[in-house]
Image (cartoon, rainbow, N blue to C red; front, side, top):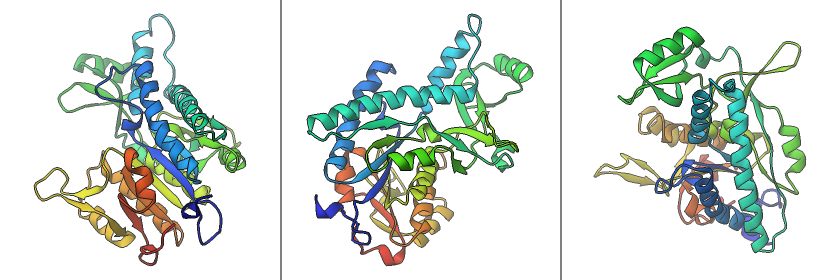
Length: 332
């Protein structure tokens, strides 16, 4: 086994939870179809397979924003023929078909490399606090766009919250509570040493735990990066690897004075967050998740980079690394 993929602290393979951004599942140059998604998933799987073949132990978390939007749109258009699916059910559907594509693509990529490691998708529920303040302030736009007339009708008929979205029409908004408990974490732990697990897709299906310990799905969206962070903590991972469209995090992104960030202490990362350097709907949740994980135990690191630079970033050649002060010079 490659000694570079062994954690010197434990003597065991480095554990990674990889959070896949939207570009890992969609190509803007291709039509938004299941066939196109499978093509992109096959390209994504090549990079994940490379990580596994180098000796890292990995689990995969993916987003589902565009996909669940299309599921909701199809359900809305078919409402006169068949009853629309509840939002939590749509989340489960998106986990299933995205997981299926990644599972198939990654299995094939590993087989080509003669690495016979099983890959499985776990339909994952994530419990949230019913008293989370996010439930009082729905903020996450989902699904199709509506006219003002349609929005007023839906608000009256279904009690939905709707907001005008950037001049493009009105959209339903749902709460975005923090992840509290991964319900299937015991299963994921059992699978970890023998299987590459795809879990917490789309942030997980949000559920609340009733007083009798039964579960109830709720209309909400859990941030995918925060769910990946929770999974990484629960699995005692060494690295939270957040894969996005850029190779590094920047200050003043896309401005003439933009500055790439290489290595950050958690304290400096918090300072940049407080100063408002990162957009709320883009890099901010990634930075928040990265700081939370790197602060959770000495020796842990978060890396934000592009999918295509993932292995180089793990080798310390690129990417933005966030860790505690004492871990800056420690290679894991």
